[in-house]
Length: 541
Image 1 (cartoon, rainbow, N blue to C red):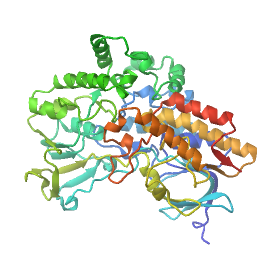
Image 2 (tube, rainbow, N blue to C red):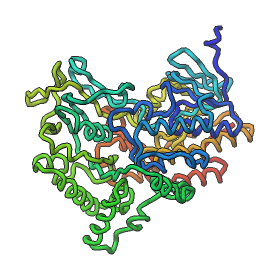
Image 3 (cartoon, helix red, strand yellow):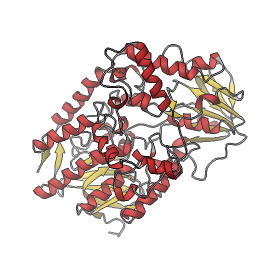
Image 4 (spheres, rainbow, N blue to C red):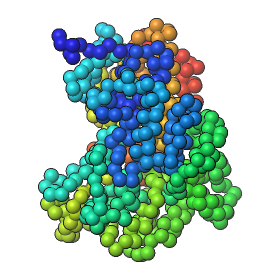
């Protein structure tokens, strides 16, 4: 047997070198585990290696888009309140320099499959390069947006210009100046590309299915004084993440109070004016909890947003397409984006908005995009801002085989059941962090990576100390966890929107609430109860 064919022997193999994977590597090493990360990209950073399209930036403000370890944040500063992709990459290099992570990362190593060997109670892992590993624990940290989705658009291969998905943007960049650009999709990446291309493109054609209820980012550059101010009370900011619904350092209790009961409509709108001035996610995550359950309050919130946006648009027809009189779905139940000048771009004479509900794309042709009305929209560059197979896509892209010979892809064909958002029955010793049925996409990413990540590290440490070699969630625990999520989601307005939150943005994917919607404090309380009962729901031996 060749050296390459001999599996690398590990206590734990982590897949993915984003926030979750790097945290697992660091914490498991601290506990004495022999652990490595396998990462498909040639550098660390997870989604921030791949996301380098024009305008790409984080929509969590800088202090909360970091690890909470003092040795990492005390001598690090972003230059803007909301950091750009290149500065986030610099941050990861800073983390690497401090913690020495790269010595235990195999880059350019894409995991293609894995199966569990019952005799040895270890995972055998295959990679695209032929390198193999044998590990007691397999910890999947592939993130919620690692498998790009390209819609089945007829003729896409016939396009004579350049076609690029935002998640696979060329690392050397693309000069947008003077180009006629077509952008398919107005989710977060579409918003960022469109507002960035606005000043430079010769012409922009935006193909929109659903308007984005984007909120003002209130971006600003940070001088030394501003950077110092953001570091005040950092320990408390990080500690508060465990006490807020979405893992931020603020919640609806900080901005809106526990309920809007007893308030007049004028009082509610006056409070929303304050939220709007502050910007960021405050008008969303700092809003009353009733926006997720009460249709009247939700409609008020939508109308408030609509009227604010319409003030920035000069063409009534464009205003109706971007901020319709009647909401296309309830406010806040699809992922809200932050914008800086997105709506002003549509006041430009060289920008066209194509409503795909009125005139769908018929096919892509050599010179551009042909819509159902027969018109050909000529473009030089076609940008696919069409998102991802969110949350589960990175996991099901690998051929991970259960003890009874079923791939994870097939096991979840009719929906996910994943106990504590961390394990699924039939796949022993396999955990996922920041994945399905954890707070994940309804949470600040680094918060979930650390808070859930700590629970996983504690669990595998408990196993080692107890002399256990095999752990698996029970099928009953998986199903009960899914039922808890489904029942909560049924009492909200989330189901009234086509969104990746409900896993129905991908054709054929089973519709369900794919994240844990009850909030970070409740999620951590469930872990507390499980641990107090000797990790009930997990079968160990």
